[in-house]
Amino acid sequence: MAGAGARVGVVGASGFGGAELLRLLARHPDVEVAIRAAAGSAGRTLGDLAPGFPPDLGGDAVLTAPDVTALGALDLVLLATPDEVSLELAPALLAAGTRVVDLSGAFRVSAAAYASWYGRPHTAPELAADGPRAAVYGLTEWAREAVASAALVANPGCYPTATLLGLRPLVALIEPEGVVISAVSGTSGAGRSARPDLQASVVLGDVVAYGAPSHRHTVEIETHLGAGAAPVAFTPHLVPVARGMLVTASAVLRAGVTPDDVAGAFTSAYADEPLVHVLPAGTFPRMKATHGSAACQLSAVVDPRTGRVLVTSAIDNLGKGAAGQAVQNANLMLGLPETSGLEALGVWP
Image (cartoon, rainbow, N blue to C red; front, side, top):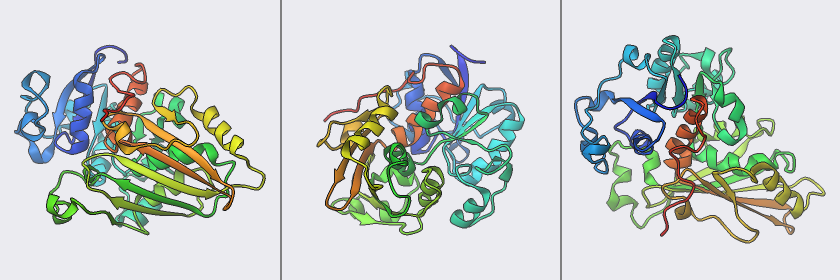
């Protein structure tokens, strides 16, 4: 079923990503959320876990345990679940005839890369990036037609989304070796689970690097950059905000590439994109400018002294970096307007 009245389910509804999905879908004009599931929070109401939901917008909905039979009767299911849960649910839902958007890392890379970077075997290798029924990697602006017809979409990670939107237009203009990426993210990117290092008294007033040089998003960036899987240097940082992401990526330009070439590449890629906004030369994205939206702000500047291009990208890690992009992909899969239910402008200030 496509068009008005599409019935969807959200699994993992108690997490930050799941709650953001439900927030976006609460006023979606063409979608009915028929099932809100969360294994560990079954029996609790959505309003208990996400206080922003009043009763008339789903706050009194009781979360249920995931039921493949019930979910399999829907038009589409969005999985905001850990990758090991998605590895179990996605194949079962596909077998039941339901299309799936998965927000985890389960299907973004090859089975071998998953085993190496996640430290456990891939249990559905046919759906991995190199499998015979590979999921479509849902970087929407670069995979629109494939997403629309996909049975399974692997929603990109937040860091890869911001990074790839900034670098993909320049792949033909940069040297594949020597890409350096530094990024900051709000604490919601770590999920809802309580952790000592995410307590307010620890993160407030502090900035810390983490996960380098083996953060899982590194291999995802290398896989989907389109630069021959050349290694990249990626360092993420945690900053004391709830949501938001800013990525700065530097790459060596090929001989003869000019600032006009760089500007032209971005214009060619994004001039007509409703959710990707290329800023004027000399203007840099701000993390807060995309707060609460499904948008991405980009800028690029050429440094003639070093022969490098510096690309800056800002997104909301729960918006374009997760739930916003998932809804964008779901819209395409359901034959709906791509930006339906989404906001292209951030909340300012």
